[in-house]
Length: 161
Picture (cartoon, rainbow, N blue to C red):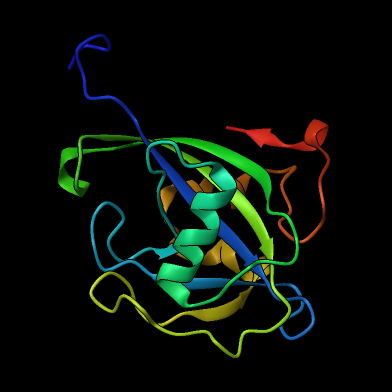
């Protein structure tokens, strides 16, 4: 496949959802049931729609997949990954994935909204993810030496892999 004639990349938005009051040091995770990445752990997320801002996409996807809303605090772009998926994993697909950090105050409304796409959502300590089978964009974020989802980062500290 030529770089000039191949399919255009997709833009994915993943939401690094934190609830520090109830689940300190944890992120919201589920297992993917579809390709690409079937069987890996993922963050809530989906595709950026035409004309949609990164933040609006993150808020929409978080609500569609988990029933949670993040309305109080602004969301923050904390990581960007560039991933290729081969034909045997739902490809060939090229994804640019934006990780948006969202903090919520309460998870009482958390629901499993798309059982055909993923397993139930659960809170897992960020530090435990190193040893898990992760969806490629999340794996890149976890493996980045400078990236820590729990700490706040300025624009100068953000990683783009």
